Length: 96
Image 1 (cartoon, rainbow, N blue to C red):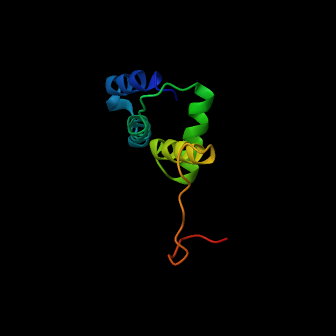
Image 2 (tube, one colour):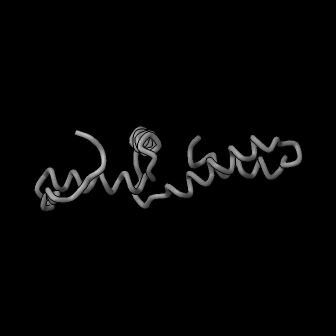
């Protein structure tokens, strides 16, 4: 579902709310919430947007959080930001 079709989908659901199942209405509302949660100020190509949304869902983080991570890592990799150092004494999650 694209952003442009969400308003039409919501309007259609409002017009036929008495005929919709609870599950169908729940799906539409969750999709709308996801789109609203991931609104960004930077227009992206559809393929890029789809990739970001898929990766964010896979990582279970918001799209804007994912974009911040990607941007920070790119800036560090290309020496526009200093590379963050990890304190060797501190505990970190995950495994090596």
